[in-house]
Length: 110
Image 1: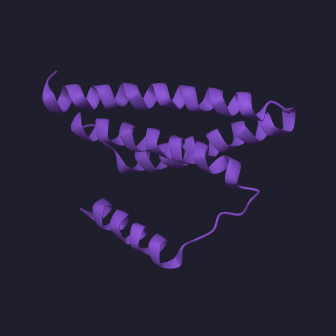
Image 2: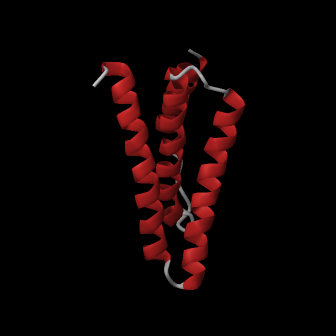
């Protein structure tokens, strides 16, 4: 319940204050969002499997976002930013779809 309330408060604050992302950070935002989604789907899966640990979730969430952003930053410095960004998206996408499939099987038994 606390998580849902925090989500609603975050959405309302985002609408009210309309934050702007600095241009230097804009290439990293989509990667960070996909990494965060990976952590959220993993957390949902762990919750349904009754092995959810809030500490593990928070560490996973922050670590996924930071590592994904650092990989894209490294790719930018090496001159292969687009290729490395695509690789990060593909890997995280595979993980998200794997977790989504596990959630579907858990919830619907199919």
